[in-house]
Length: 478
Image 1 (cartoon, rainbow, N blue to C red):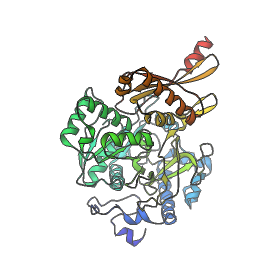
Image 2: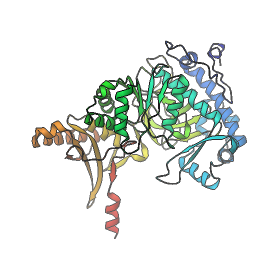
Image 3: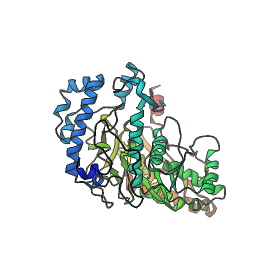
Image 4: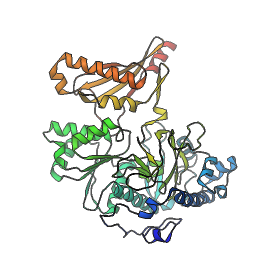
C-alpha cells in the first residue's frame, strides 16, 4: 500500500485494523480516495498478496480448507496473482451445511477459538439445515467499517437518519446496515418489520419522523407505499432522499426502480451479495448509479462460468464467486453464489475504478425454470409486469402441466383505476401483458388479471413462483 493511502488512516494489514475515530469530511466523496480510485492493476497486486495471507490463515486453522485444497493439489503459496485463484476449488453452501452437521455448531472452517465468537447469525433453515455464522468481535467491526464505506459512496452522511425496514433476526441485512450507518455517524432508526400491523405503524412513523434514508427489500418498499396510501399518507411527503435495498433482485430492474422512485420521490440504489461473506455490501451502487460497484478490496469477486468456475472476461454473464479479504472467524475462499449477473470494467462515473454490474444481480441460476425449451428467469417476468400501466402491485407466476405440455400463467392484480374503467380496460391490460411477455421470454404466457387486493403481500423477500408440475408428475405416476 502506498504512503499516500496510509495517510488516509487505512492500514492494509492482516489481521485488519481500523481507526474507529476516522471519518472523511462530509464534502469528500470517497471514504478512502486512493484505494477507491487507484489503477485496477495496482489493486489486483495488493489483493493477490492479501488472498495469500487469508489462505495461509485458513490453511493453518481450518481443517476444512486444508483438506479441500490438499485434495486439489493447491497450497496458499502457489497463489501469486489473482488469475491463480481459478485453480482453487469453489466452496458451495451445501458443503458448509455438511461440515457444520459433522462439526457443530460452526463447522471445521471456523478459524478462531469458539470463545471469540461474539455474534451468531445464520440462515433461516426453511429449505434445509440452517447454516450458522460465527462472527468475532473484530469481524463485527470489519463489517461496520466496510459498510460505512459503501454507504458513504451512496451519499449517506452523518446528518442523515436511516430508517431500517427489514427483519432484525438472523437476517444479516438489517444488522449490517445498522452498524455501517452507526460507524459513519448517521442517526439510525432500526424499526424492523414482520410483526402484525407493523407496516401501518411504519407508515405512521415515517410521516412523523421524516427520515432521509430508507433500507429494506424492494418488495417491502412497494407494499409499504401501498399501505401508506390506504392510510391517507403520501409516501412522497415522507422526505426520503435515498432508498437502498438488498435481499432480492429488483432495485436494479428499471421498471421496479422507477416505480419506487415515483412512489417516494427519492433515488434508489442497489446493493447486496451473500450473508455468508459479510460484509455483504461488497456489491453496492454509488451516487453515480451506473450499476453496482464490485468493491474488490472488500471482498474479491470473480464472475465465473457456471460450469467451469473460471473467471470470465468483462462483458460476459456468469455467477459471482466470492473471497473475503478481511474476515478472520469464518473466511470464505471462492464461495459459489449461483446468482446471475453480467460485469463490465470500470471506472464508474463517480471515479471509482472497480468493476461494475450494470444490471446488478438479476436472478439465480437455481431459480431459472424451463418452459417449452425456453429458459425463464422470474426477474424477467417481474420487469415486464411491474412496468405495465394498470399494474396493481402484486403478481404470481404459476407453472403447470396439462398432459405433456408446460403451461406458464401469470396472475396480475390490476389497480383501482383499471377496475373502475371496467372490463374493456382489464382485457386491454391482459392483451398488453401477454404481448410483452412473449416478446421478452420467447414463450407464451397466459395472463389472468385479478382484482385489487387479491394476492398476499410480503414484508420481506417476495416469493412469487408456484411450480405445479411436480404435482402433475405425481398424479401421473399414481
